[in-house]
Amino acid sequence: MTTIKAKHSPYLKTTYAKDMAIEAFDTPFRKKWALVGLLIALTFPFIASEYFIHIANLIAISCIGALALNLICGNAGLLSLGHAGFMAAGAFTTAIMTIHFKMPIWIVLPSACAVGALLGFIAGLPSLRLKGIYLGLSTLAMHYLIHYGCSEYQFHGGFGFGVKIEDPQIGSLVLSDDRAWYFVLWILVLITALYIKNLLRTRPGRAWIAIHNRDIAAEIIGIHIGRYKVLAFVVSSGITAVTGSLYAYYTNVASVDEYSFMLTIYYLAMIIVGGMGSILGSLTGAFLITVLPFMLLYITDFFEISGVVKNFFFAVQSGIFGLVIILFLLIEPLGLSEIWRRIRVFFQLWPFRFKSLQVTKR
Image (cartoon, rainbow, N blue to C red):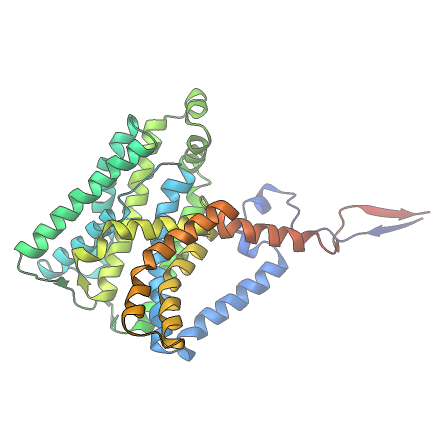
């Protein structure tokens, strides 16, 4: 009698530890691609031009902001339209602390996070009574309150078109060029993604998902939905304020004009296009929506579009964003992350090179 042991698929989870492992490193194939991605990320700033490094840095900042918004909208199922306001709060907290108190970045970032969390707590209180579009309108009101306060500080403080911020310093490293910022920002993206991924596995994360699926059922099984709704606003707004702080540091200016309601629309487009409730969707959506304006600029230059036509072309940029959102809602409501999931499942099943049975010959 001959027993042939077939090779088990690495995608088959047989232990709790394997089920809880980070997906990027749970199979040999993913480990190899993770290593390739790491090598590309490390070599990119040394072979790319300053222009493309700048775009990569903007993508990194957008990734952090999209992760924060997707946490509250995609995972907790709460509509927040105050995203740009919380970013403005983080940016102007940075401006105040660096100009008036000369605080270093390692103190400013936690302080901006605390300010954003406090504002998020206030914005989350209406969620105890409101839901849906009514909750969204209350967060929109918070956005305009923050926007008004920041504009009063900017214009009545004598800062004109924006508050100038000096380059931050981490030890002996001065973040004065895009290459240095590249490593800092993408490390923060990795930390934020891992933090949110693990947070969703904890009691609050599971409570948010339960509230998202059906808040009445969540309350019946003993989840304090009011507490966890407010907590979702606190965590998301804190991370969002850090995003605004990083953007202010990176651009060396905190200007209220940068944080209009249209910025919230852009971030909503990121998580809709990428995929609601998905970390990968937040990253891919942030990449696509951030790169889109640069693609439009390249198209106008490539086809030598000039004059009135070029100005009109950029005037409909917001319309293009809206068209992209509508197409994804009609064609693939779950976003790019769902498209990638289907592709991944296809290659996992084909050509059936893994089997989970033992074949015995007699």
